Image (cartoon, one colour):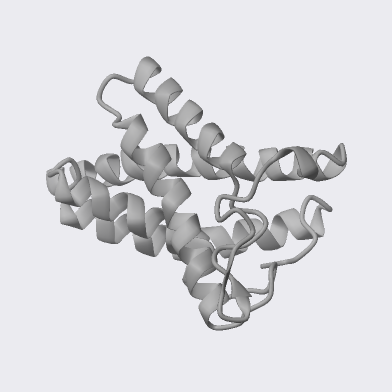
Length: 168
């Protein structure tokens, strides 16, 4: 039972900061939309195309990178054993990688792609933490499974409550 408890704690210590960064990015995006301030935030790919599609997409921005780093640094400040900078960078570049994959498949902005839309930030962040030996493989696996189950449910509930345009 001790192993299950340790894996559960490690999983939460990995997933909760990722969810905080992801939530901050969503709040940042929705705030920009609400106040018509999107024009003040530059796309991370500078609006460049690779073939017929953008390299990343309109919602992967320099402001998003700044928010990710800021939340990561705050996490590190308040919780000494959380690698906030790695988590902030992992979440942002996980989203960027997901956006890149969606653009290569020609999937429109806002359209749903399983695993990529709800797991990209956790997959890459966990991989970074695994490489640095700061996350046990069991916690990584449990975190990925948890996020792939929880995140769509949370999105559906948020859509029904009027907080999201799309259910997934």
